[in-house]
Image 1 (tube, one colour):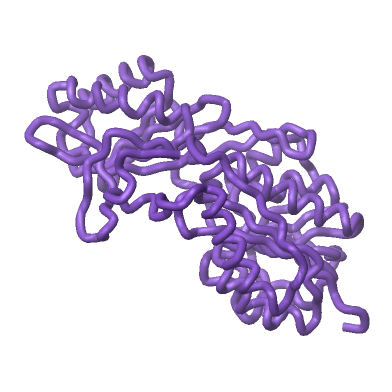
Image 2 (image 1 turned 60 degrees about the vertical axis):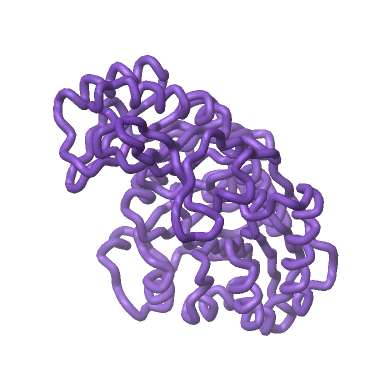
Length: 374
C-alpha cells in the first residue's frame, strides 16, 4: 500500500518497510515472546495490504465553510487533513469522498458543528455512516440526510449529546464464508466488530482447526461479543455457553443465532469475573435464571480478552478445562498469562494474525492442551 500521507498521518506507523518485512518483524516479536512456552514455528496469517479495514473513524476539520477529513498526526500533538485513505475497504472508499462533497454543498445543514464521521461496512457492500455533531439535530437535518442516504445507497445515522437519529437501520449485515459455510452477522453501529474481515475469517478458521482436534464435549466462551467465533465453533461442540458483558453485543449475538439457525448456544450477560464466580458457585446471578451450569461438560474454553489479558480468577478457572483456545490482541499479556497456564497445559499450536497492517499492532492465538496427570 502507498499513501501520500505516510509519515505525516499517525494512523500507519510502519511505512518505510515492505509488507513482507513488516510481517517478518512481527513474527520475530511474537515468536520471541512465545518461545519460552512454544519453540516450534508459529503460523502467520497475512492481510490484504490495502483496502482491508471495514470500520474507520475520521475527524472533520473546518476551514471556513469547507469541511475536510482529518487524522491525528504522527507526532501525536495535532491533526492533519487527508485526501486519501487506502486502508479502508472499497464500500467505504467509494462513499466517503462523495459524502464530503455533499456535506460541503449542503448550505451548512450537514456540515455545521459536525466533528466526526464513523463508517461501518461489509464485504457485501453494505455501509452505515454515523455523523457526530455538537448540535441538536432537527427535521431539516433528517430530511437532507435522508436524501443523501438514497444517493449514496447506504444507511445514515446522526448522533449528538443525548440524541440518536436513525433514518433507516442502525446495523449492517455481513456475510462471511468460513470453512465452507456461510455465516450471517448483524453488526450494530455501537457494537464491537473485527475491523479486518479477511483476517477475521482466517482467525475463525484457525480456531475451528483447533476445535476439530478436540471433537467432543461442550464449549465455554468468554468475551463472545456478537458471536463472531461462537457461531462457527458451535458446529463442532455439543452445546455452547458464551458470556459477554455488553447488552448490545448479547442482543446482536441472539439475533445472529436466529439468523443462522443455530440452536445449541446459550448466551449469558456476564463479565469474565462474574462467569468465574458463577461456575465456582461463589455467587448466584439472576441473569443465569433457567441455565443449569451443572449440566455442562466443558471440554474446551475459548477466551478473547481485551489488551489487559485475563484476570487471576479466570486463569484459575480455565486451568481446570482440558483444552484452551486463547485469542489475544496483546502478545505481551498473552505471554504473561502463559506463565500460569503452562503449569497445567502445554502449547500445541500458535499463530499470528496481521489484523492491522502498517502498524505495530498484531493479534495472536495459542491452543493449549492439559498435561497428562494435571
